[in-house]
Length: 353
Length: 197
Image (tube, rainbow over all chains, first blue to last red):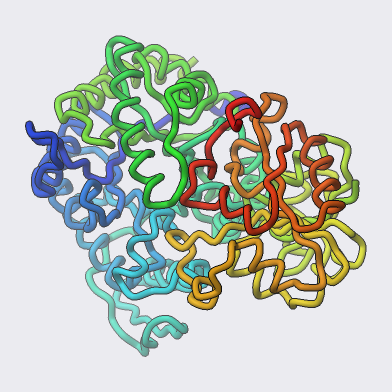
């Protein structure tokens, strides 16, 4: 789809689940180091002018970002311009009141830069952890999103009255703190058509997580999002962002080789948990080139691919998960730097024409 | 062939599109009624007819189960009597949670589906390929396995799978279908007939 003449700004960013480093002995290192590394990465992303950093809730020994709002609050106090969000909040297994309070608090600290990207949860470890049933997956999400949106729409000092099936009712309860403006709340989806329609119906910006296959597979879903928006009269509120795996190094081959090691480890590990076969290098190579979901390459190559995709689907934010599978921290930082200092200027220049 | 697909998520819509592209007639249903599929089918799978589950079953002899296993076994067990079922579901507890009654049965998931819909003929297929690879890996020699306890149904589904552009291979009986369930080497892996040998 061509967005003729309406070149809107394209935001670029990063997201992370926290990435535990490998020790010299080859073992998984401390989770505490992964948290401080992530904070350093966010601060660098701000410094090099990136637009967004997302912290994705996970609960594993290799992805330890179990408490995104806490990290974001620390980042909020130590960065200037960058937008900060969850990527994602597994809303299905959280209490929307608590989610709202934590993100609203961080939003106040940041001066209005904090967002929530709310997902149903593709990593499912939070369900048993917090005592929810996976078979209630969609009903949980639907109900909790409803409450979160209502909390976010409250006027100043307006109490909430709400009733659902998965948590105790709220009767005329004040919810504090409230930020000056409502939080920006995105709906995250991995490509289920109903989720796309839900986002359009609710007038929410949408975040597509494209982690495999071809990018163009998502183009019809984005068309569905826009068409549904026209039907529901929410078009003016709709925005599309894309989250995908990606990694940048000066040299394209170096980037692809480095990311293969990290991404390959992660998919192999995930495969063991979920019962699917490990990916092969040939599969990785096919997906880390033109129209594939994996954005590993040189700054020019990644900029070209973002621009090409933007011309097709008109997304206005693209953010990359770079630190997976014990990506060496210095390489992660360098990749962030290259995204900010080399990719971003190329993208801005191309889209300003 | 006339194909009825139950489930309009990522797998159902991908299978619908691929079937339409290969000259099949496709209808699709979900649990919430055809009106909820109007917009998405128009844009994502133009040419597919949204129907209510009952109508879809009444009008089709071949039904694909393209929904989560735990939802498939909430469908009324006799409603599919006399039909050929292509079982594309998987019992996938890390993603969908555990179902004790299934785990205690000691059956492969498609044997369980066969026992549940005991008036229908179940064929296990299209369960071991990721939805996002269906439309990309046709014509590449990628194998899709077909297992059933009924030879005629197996033959029918073999022809269907081949018509989509895959190399079909005999997966044996439904009990043997356990060799390409989650937690096996074949599940979600890409292989040709030569590599399968």
